[in-house]
Image 1 (spheres, rainbow, N blue to C red):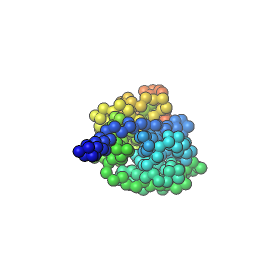
Image 2: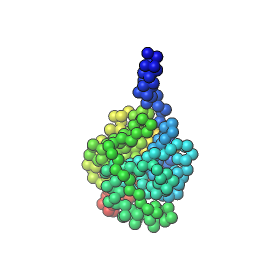
Image 3: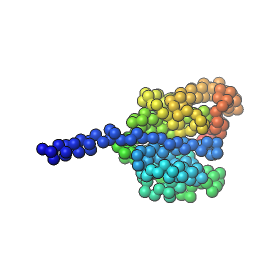
Image 4: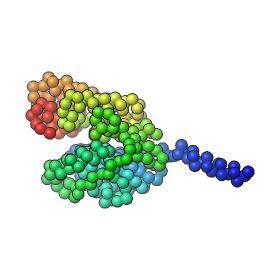
Length: 288
């Protein structure tokens, strides 16, 4: 009877252990204005292990990220790449060299996008980045399913069933956090050059509404000015920017007028290069 009681208690402890797992934490690396095109990488840490979301653009930035991961004292088990633009994955060769046992994964849509564009992206960005360009491009393995597990807690990829599965985001329900990736900006001009139709921008707004519906406490934008709050306010900023960009594009005579108006509406926003390119594409003055 005593043995049975002890065994039952032990089994119960095993069953309920995940409920008492240490809360996951987020460590955000954002190189800010020091980078050509700053992107946020997020280290999600548990008690012993960690998952990295996005790998930085240049080798120098990726090396700083490696140092941050090492300083955490956690074992990096997985690297998840959230989008197929090079600022999200060019740093993978540096990350892989430092953590060769970590799995590198992405959604099928992201993997396909990287495969399709990587040679052209290296050809374009190589001369600009020079020694900071990737020595080799690592293409992630396809993630099976829509969930990454860290010490019994889920990192779920949301948006895969919507109209733009190539523009998804990460939802961590246990801490009510969203890692927004390419979908969310804050206090920077939003990169609109890749969403060139009214329908694609409407779909973007629908994705933002999906984030709102989750009622997150924390939102880490893929691109944000250092010091901007990591809150749902970033979703509001992105939504408002897209709506205003749509309206002002229709009224502006050319890209110069559109740029001037958006700067007037967002006088503190950084990343003017994004506005310059987006405005020229929107007014038909540049192909992208």
